[in-house]
Image 1 (cartoon, one colour):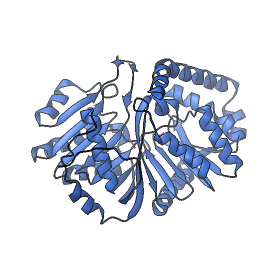
Image 2 (image 1 turned 135 degrees about the vertical axis):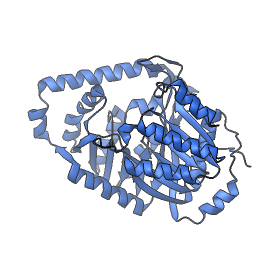
Image 3 (image 1 turned 90 degrees about the horizontal axis):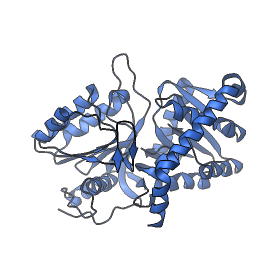
Image 4 (image 1 turned 90 degrees about the vertical axis):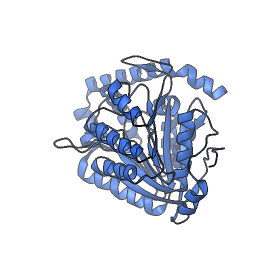
Amino acid sequence: MSSAKKIKTTYTFNNHATLVRGGKEYFDQLKTLIEKAQHFIQLQVYILEEDHTGNEIKDCLIAASRRNVRVQILLDGYASRNLTKPFIQEIRNAGIHLRFFEPIFKSKNYYFGRRLHHKLVVTDGCFALIGGINISDRYNDLPHQPAWLDYAVLIEGESAFELHKLCLHFYHKKRNVETWIDKYTVLTHAHTFPHTAIRIRRNDWVMNKNQISGTYMEMFRNAQRTIIMMSSYFIPNSFFRNQMSAAIKRGVVIKLILAGKSDVAIAKNAERYFYQWALRNNIQIYEYLPTVLHSKIAVCDDRIVTIGSYNINDLSALASVELNAEIEDHAFAETTIKEIEAVIKHQTIEIKKEDLAEHFGIWNQLTQWVSYIIFRSVFKLFTFYFSKKSSIE
């Protein structure tokens, strides 16, 4: 056994990355990883629901535990608060270690404090699925109900081991934890993978981590041709918008793929408040139509992809515990671009300047402005003190 002495933030290179679309493709891959695990399964997720999909994954984890695989589950204490006691007890009775990541205070309708926004599973320290996908029917393809649009990346190799250590760090709330996995066996196995550069990026205001935000700033400053962002709840702050404007002035083309339908109406209205600004700055906007768009992914040129739990708003930047994988690989970036361009071509409508007058009239613009003010005010009320405090400490 070895100890996790340091959570690395630099690139590792003995990796392989595969883009995984949400819905059936994602959950088939998740079940395969769980079924093939031999030593250790770590699941950290914002939402686990007690529905068809949640029960199916629960049964897979229980079956793994019964064949002597160690299973650890970390759930957000607010978003997964509706799990019943029998559901939780069934998991624990199977020998699975389950803990909730608790905010400072929570009630039925709101919480106060950090939230664990990870969507991550790691098996045997060798394989990891990281993205924006919770465990719920909304994210799965079911009869007469297509999944929300989302993506993850399957990582095999060294970066999966870094995520294994990070899971231990969060679950046990301390840095020096035995890995339960033979590091040297894992890394020897990792050397069989192609040369794909990956680094794990975090945002966590308590730990003074601002790495995912930093990735986006690097993209804006270094892009030569194109930045494509597919984002739910896109409500960028003024600094983020200024960096976008600077990139555009250098000749960079920026495309935004945003939700046409949203599960949070006030967030969608606040998001549309930015359309006039974006179109004035020659940013291309596309709204995804078939279902709710929940994806959090961006591509810079044909070189760098960031994918994970991070939304482009201050809630992710300053209040949540977020986790992304940053992949610097031409082939992976090209695959991701082809996937997104297919979505744009077949499943979106482009929003143009003339649409604002026709479909986003004065009343709608007022509603959007009010939604934005409410969204920002509530956010500041609950996070301003803590974000200022963390920047000092």
